[in-house]
Image 1 (cartoon, rainbow, N blue to C red):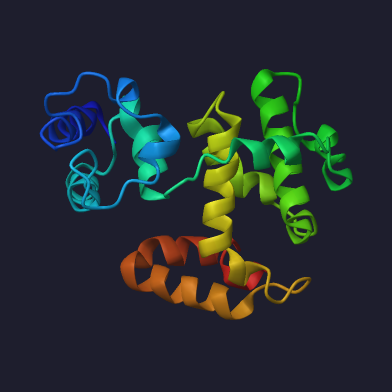
Image 2 (cartoon, rainbow, N blue to C red):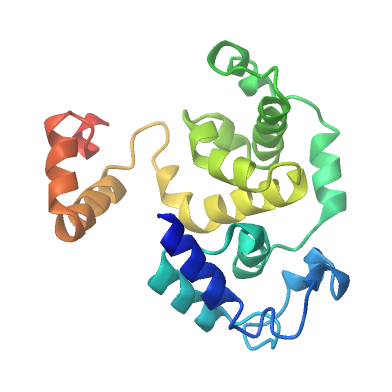
Length: 203
């Protein structure tokens, strides 16, 4: 979105109960407790947040991580994450050195995130492209490895299960559904992907 959309999102966001009369939510509640607040909370209102997203197409940059913590109901289970991290690099992630530049801090964080996910659910280590699925969360929660892991695990557990139902075969039924939805809502994009060989048939 353009800067106008960002400004609109910021203005809408500050009109919600989330920030009315509160300059710094972090001083009121830790993130782990904010993630457990009910939808009816005076601090966070999922319906109004949804309205902001529909109108502006985004949440304000400075509040995006907090909002997604709330919407995904992340538990902030630091001890469980620490236990997974202590197990070190997962053997399946060793080839990442050949595909990614892991010299940067972000690369190292992504590697640790992938290892934690693979230790948490070994099936995830079997499929290709896991890094592409979780990279947005690694970037969004840059420096907050606990939240990056919990957000990735939550999305995969709730919306990624069917990708692994037929492993090691592609999820043909799911891909067909995605193609049908894309063709209905964005026919031009669906035709383009088909023309360049990037549609579900490519699987």
